[in-house]
Image 1 (tube, rainbow, N blue to C red):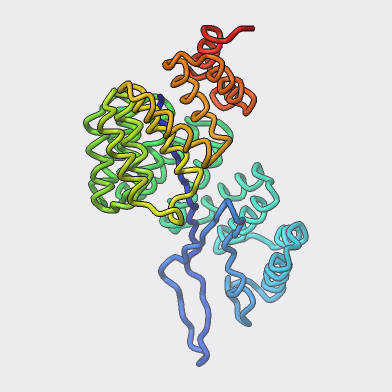
Image 2 (image 1 turned 135 degrees about the vertical axis):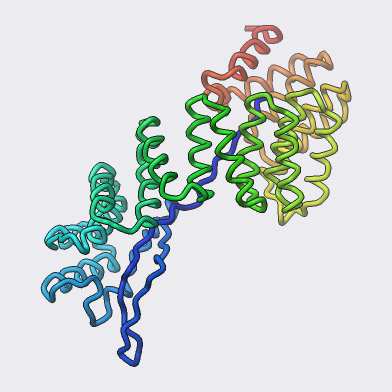
Length: 368
């Protein structure tokens, strides 16, 4: 069984700095620290600071006519009239002092309408106009994400290196570099950058999980186990770390360790804290390890529980088929093999060994 990596990018953080506002006493307040704005790809909250634009002052040091356009664009965006908001922004004249803000906002809206090519251009222009290194560092990371989405991995690496050169201690860019080097098959460099992230912040469980995953995939099993266990020391309830440990144990035939870890996950999480789909996966993994130890009846019970919890669990049907083959009940085995195939097993594991395995299992045990 292959270890399944989980890549989580919860959000991209983008900055706008040096925005002036006024308090109720009309005293000028300059925000020297960047305002961190979140772009969440799930809910499309693009983090545009509309409230700043609605205040009656020269927020971006624009003349009155340009500021009016900016506020009009912000209002249209708040009303979800995205294309109109963008058209208004295009009318604003860009100068050297505030060009990076205008281009940044254009890019944000272009992302919202999925015009990624123009968003890429706008973000690049925002970097050209900006003298704020913090802003530039974040934007290089965002642009690197664009490159990766398009499959331009080497371009992504170049932009991440530019971000890294601005601040070599920033953990998110170190993690992105590590993941990018892993994609390129340059495992040693991937581990080097993620290790640096861990050394900078030893409480960052995401870094530990990424480092453990890379080590596990590259055959550095003892190191992988160590990093996952360190993540669990920080957060004992971290199910994902236990899941990674189980995968490593199973890949290296440490099935007693896998069973112990799986039982801990199931017993320590109530029905409300663990989704049925996840519980189904863990029971399926239990059945696999128990079968390897020739505990056929226990394995079958766990496989049945897995399917009952989530009737579309492809792996559970395959595992139960393996159990039935071991018990000599080929008719039942073939029924489960066909069920897994009907549910899309081959599409799920396209071009992977699992697809070949189930077809071989079918060929060896099922009549045509």
